[in-house]
Image 1 (cartoon, rainbow, N blue to C red):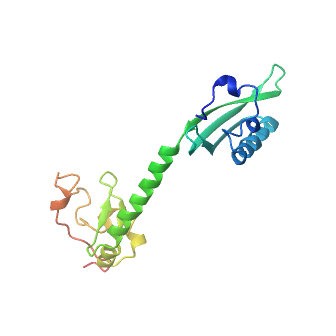
Image 2: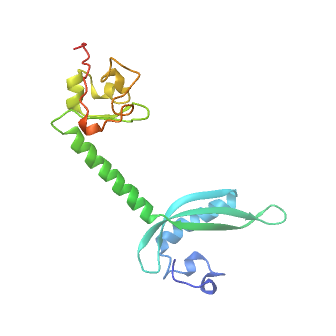
Image 3: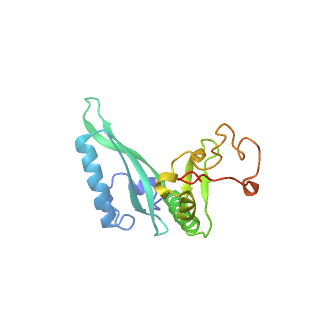
Length: 178
């Protein structure tokens, strides 16, 4: 990860490897190690690591205090996993979700996103909420049968009758019953 062999690392402190571990990162690791050595137990945290290619990447560090025969802390042991790509993917997914939500919220037509298994409304835009005479927050999280297919709550034209969503015509129930 940092471009050194075992022999180049063993027996050295993190402060003795400034070409591989910048002082700002060494301070973070040292503080965490001191806490672990003092308190014992385990640690699990994310931290930046400067890799052999010079790039800083985010790693998950999972460490535990090592105990000697008397049960005293004599060191620590740990594993590191590079989570940079996962964090980037999560960030991209959040951004895409924000974009999709923005598009749906601003569409000029009423849109309901319904979980077919539970029939819960996962998302409703303002246009559909206005058509239903309800605030968006009353529509989202409710069962769709409160607003559509209200005459027959035992079947669902999409889920139970194998219709495709794009071809279903539904009757909506306004708050005032029309």
